[in-house]
Image (cartoon, rainbow, N blue to C red):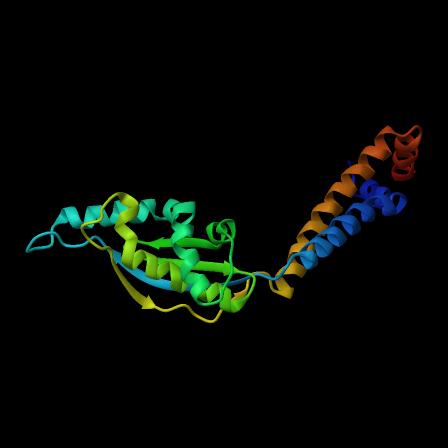
Length: 210
């Protein structure tokens, strides 16, 4: 199809092209602004399996890798959340078990990890990360069935200043992306209408060749 034909399709069906873009962008803005604000903070931890015996061994480092591989599942479990919840309550922070499970995430960095906490307020996000660190330090190995030793958890960087998960710029960018996709979909609809509606294809082709 010639470029001039596409231009003529755009001129003839401009409303059909713009409508999906406006709907997609508008709904994206409405949905994002309707969501309650969420804040996230991050702490960096160094986690190692405890030394059993007089010397450190390769087995200890291998066990550390296994623990870090399992840690995302532990952090998102109801059992871990049940350990964290009383510590939050002691700091006058009320989060349900699902909120704790959904709010704790981690990014592995070899034997270090970035522990992320997300909650509806900055204070709750910071408290969530700090409570999770305490649970790892005191009961970390219990989640793997070990109660005779404690996991070595060193805080390399404490929880920083919580930041909004979705900034205004991110919301606008998200809406722009969806509007662009809606524009593409609208143009595809316009081309389909030009080809399928009676007489449209012939008139467009004649406008190019004459």
